Length: 382
Image (cartoon, helix red, strand yellow):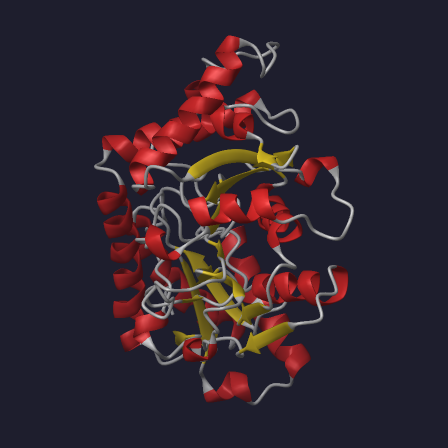
């Protein structure tokens, strides 16, 4: 096969940290108050601005609390679990590696005895009808490592007595989240808006706040996880104060991404951009004789973390080690040519490819990448 001549202008397709917004330059951070305290008025104002712009773009309802917390999305999810769980039985939904991690936390770390793990293999979802609305439920809205997302929030009862804890890190700003169905939502800056890492966002519904103020977990609570003081919510966390020192450079970059999102039309446009990227991949997959989606069900197929498997019988004839080596060779070829970077499947996922198609990725770059995938696959098959 002839090597393609056209390359993506931005070859970054990593699923985290993700591509910067189109046109991003380091000068976007020139207004960072470096050397200033995050507790000074200028620092606190910028932190509060991140919160307020996020609320507006995501249409987060009045009465919900939004805060900036340490340790990325992982820190936000674990803060919620350690602070809220134990009052009710728990259902954990897992169909990829991050959901599996939350199940490990609940079962092996918190050691909650009344826990059900509802599990499905990569490419599928558990039966959402099995979720008990009287239990707390933990789930990822979009499985970043499997390319599988929940189709909607219809399976979540409006009359639930348990809390819904949703890891939405690769869904927020790219998928329409039904806030009335969600009590805790988390994400990180380095996903859909392409920000810098180390910081997470935590959203609490009034029901979640009520739990925090009426229930005290049986285990010791590290300072970095504490959301209450004297039995009351620490409101300042949700007003621009943070539990530990944030990077003001990362804060400035988060603001840049939020302002860009507003400039292109907000959430509607962000979702449309990601869906257009998936459409480009879908059209290519339909014609491909070697690549397919990891999930065969379109209704649960992610339009951010697009995961592919290799369906060629030749590839299937190889043993597992040979398949892994060939997939790495394919990814390395693309990297060497600077045609596509960081396209390998997640380490715990089935062998294949993963293309980040979130809102900061241009559809023209996705279209330019796809012929390179064909070329690289032909090369590893020689």
